[in-house]
Length: 338
Image (cartoon, rainbow, N blue to C red; front, side, top):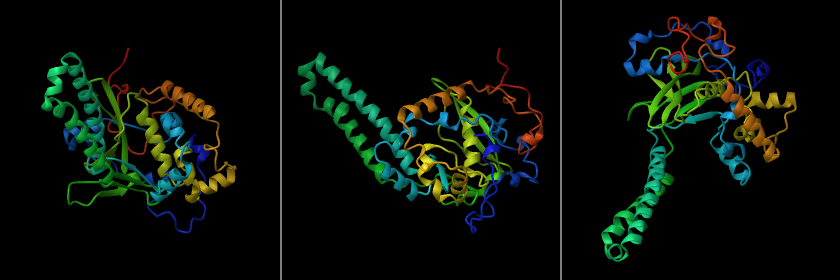
C-alpha cells in the first residue's frame, strides 16, 4: 500500500470534490507554523514529536481488530445500509467527550463491570452468612438492585443520546471540524493546515500512545480517542488518515470501506482500472483474511519506530512543514534506549 503505487490523476468528477479537498500539493507554499514556545505547556507536550508525511509502514490492515475483518459475516445487508446512511466514504469521525452518546456508552461499560462485581460480592456474602444476608433488604438493594438498575438506565440513555460533537474528517471537502465549548461553532479548517504528532500519557498499566493533529497556527487540535500500547500505531493511523483524505488516491482498502468504494469517484475509477473485485473482502475465506491480518500485524509490530523513522531521510522535503528546530535522534520514548 505504498503511496506511489496508489496515486492517480483524479477523474472528471463533475465537481464532486470541493476546491479545498486534500491533495499533497496543497502543502506547498504554506507559511511556517507558529513557534512552539508560544503554546501552553499542555499543547507543547502534545506537539513534542512530529510525524513525517507519506506512507512508510503501510500496514493499515494490521491496525484493525479481528472483528473489523469479519464485520460482514452475520448481517451484511444491514452493515452496508448503515455505512451508506452515514456516508463513511465522505466522513470519518473521532468521538470526543463532548459527545453525549460516547459519555453514556462509557458509563454503561463501567456500570456493567460494577454490577457484575457487586452481584458476585452479594452472593459471596450470601454463601458465608445466608440467614443474615437473606434478611437484609438493604444489602440486596445496594449490591444487586441499585447497580443493575443503573446499568440498564445507562444502556437506555446510550441508545437515545445524540451522536454529535465529534471530530470530523471530510474527504469530499478536505475539511477537519473540531467541536469547541457549548454555544461555540466548531473549529473548521482544511486538512493540510494540521501537523501530525504522536503523544503519550501514562496510565496504571503502562504507556498509551495517541495520534494528535495540531493546527499550524491556532492552539487547538484533534486527539485520536483510541489509544494503543504499540508505539507504532500513531504512525499507522496517520498513514490511514492521509490516504483517506487524499482525493488523488483511492480509499484505504480495508473491509469496512469495501461496501462504499463505488460511491467515491476516485476509488471507483481506481477499482475499474485495476480490476479490483467489488467483493474482495466479503468473498474471502475467513481463514485467509485472518492470516493476512495476523501477518500484517506482525510486520507492523516489527516496524522500527525510532526517530528518524526507518527509511525516512532527514531531508526536509519528507516533511510537510519546517521542523521545530533540529530534533535530536531520540526514540519515541523521548530518550535514547540501550
